[in-house]
Image (cartoon, rainbow, N blue to C red):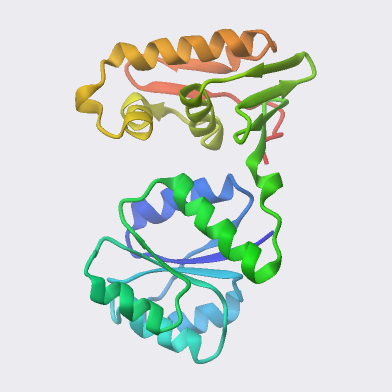
Amino acid sequence: MFHILLIEDDNTLFHEMKERLTGWSFAVHGIKDFSRVTREFTEIKPDLVMIDVQLPKFDGFHWCRMIRSQSNVPILFLSSRDHPADMVMSMQLGADDFIQKPFHFDVLIAKIQAVFRRVYQYNAEPALIKRWSGAAIDAETNMVSHENGSVELTKNEMLILKLLAEQKNKIVSREELIRSLWNDERFVSDNTLTVNVNRLRKKLDQLGIGKMIETKVGQGYIAKEEDGLYD
């Protein structure tokens, strides 16, 4: 298991990213004291550092310099700032990439996997296949396989299933699903999501697991997981 140190002071964003990354089998660590980032880095010994530019005490560039003075660990900057000077600075300090917020989670995963392949000869292919409720979810081929057979999903059906499975046993709001699929919920009919989820359920019914996706009225949907096979 790869260990990621996420240096992010936005507590909500940190926990959201930690939950999503943990679903991809990464161990995610945070910072307890933003005045002692280097010390905590030394204690954790992460395989990858993701760091925001704007932080308490000192900015991300300062901590990048400090980390680079003692380690060649891969570093990815995450920032809502889009000034070219920030991107140039991060590269000059030895960062491996600069990712602007907000970002699509799949893009972040792809960049992380690219860094791991380059630095650690990591084979990312198995990470494309996730297990949920006894089924294998292959995002590359849009196939879901189960002991009862296999079904092929559309792009949107696969995105819905991935989002729900990554947050198994937790309610995913309709708004989050719509934003992830169509970017701006203002121009999408609420019924469009309902139709896609119903189609997904019907296909999963062929595998005997359609009932594992439940509707939470007025809230969203939840992918139940009873056997703990999602990894």
